[in-house]
Length: 210
Image (cartoon, rainbow, N blue to C red; front, side, top):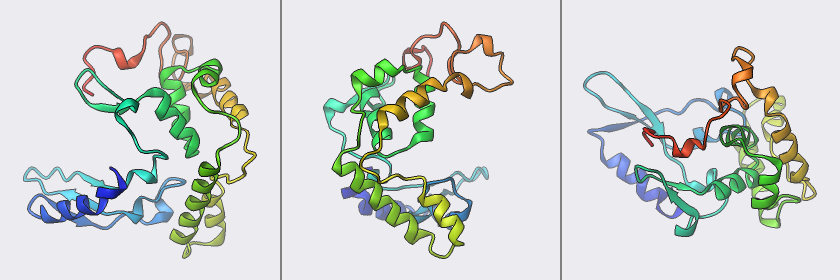
């Protein structure tokens, strides 16, 4: 959600204490690399059937580099808004979400040429370098109580080098699509870990619930 309404959203969730209650977040040492989820409010749905769904909310700047505008949004067949493919891919590139970028490339079966046509590759912008520096500072602060080796391991996932060559990084991730296919799959039927051969754009698949 936009940063500007984040405090309001937290207050709204807290006010619905008959439906949701605050719960403790997982400790940072148990989270995935680059995760700051423990820094934000976690809630649990109060359900009569015992199905206690847990979730957390956070400002969009935590995972998204730029604000979305109507021109950068597309809607699914069910009317759910999503960032356009180009905007989403550029954001993952700018925020260095390499693992998520791998899944996007595999899910959409993107090529080196697609990235060259639609993305700003090459060296990161000054704003993107500053974003990486800011994230490093936040991770360092959030893990001050962890052993030094753990702190280095987590912080090292971000690169604030202004000469970072993302053209080579994009090409390397794309070229490794075959290597990411689960070895237990019938590999001859798949062209990426998420795409069977001869399958079309998954966004256009009939019957998708999103």
